[in-house]
Length: 126
Image (spheres, rainbow, N blue to C red):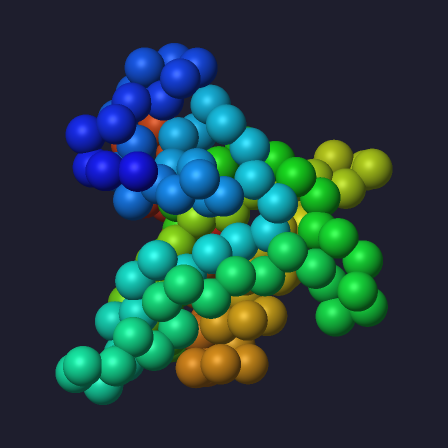
C-alpha cells in the first residue's frame, strides 16, 4: 500500500498500512505490531516490524478494532509506536494492553502505554 490509499470501508487515509496490518480504526486486527522503534541504533531497524499475535501459551490473541499505541519508560521517554487490536475478554476487560506492555517491559523496561482515542493520546496503563 502507498501512503495515499484509502480505507475501502470508511474512506479514511491508510497511513502506514500493509495488507496484513490495517491502519484504520474501522478495521480489525489480531495482536500488535511495532511500527517505529525510537531506541534502535542508527541504521538498525530494531524492533520495527515486530509482530505478536499469540500469547506465550500459543493461544491466539483475540481480534479487535485497530488502535495506535505508544510505549514509554518510567522517565516518559518514548520507545515504541505501533498499533493493536483493541480486544476485551469475556468479562469486558481490556486484554491487549497486557500483551503490549509485557513486550515493552521485557524488551526495554517500558512502564506506560498510551493509546490514541478520538485523536488524543491518553494514558491507559502505567
